[in-house]
Image (cartoon, rainbow, N blue to C red):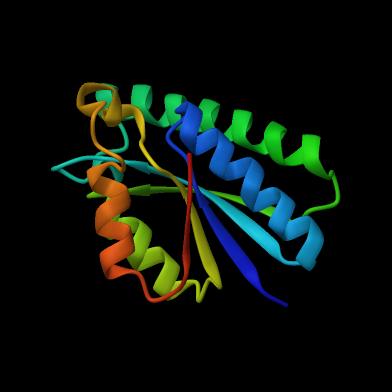
Length: 141
């Protein structure tokens, strides 16, 4: 059975990508993983007691909880896993997609950073994922 990877940062576009991924999973019978990457220079995973990490992890859990609700609104029977990663966002998405042998990546055209660059058609993270991905990437706007 196949598996899709849906990337979410809590933005409007990423939530639409989660919903599109859930629909694809429902129709194909595939499972899916919801991924949120905590961007950091110093890997917070190595500093779990750092106050900044606790705040970012709580925010990540809230984003994933909301994304899971979106999936369940499409179909409660979708096999849906949650995952938090740490590092450069695009690099982590690509690395995890390769390691997990995902069949496709679903990503929003712009994330939370895209608000500053409203004229761009796609955000820099999305662009990097497209260029470096080993599998099809569905961009949702």
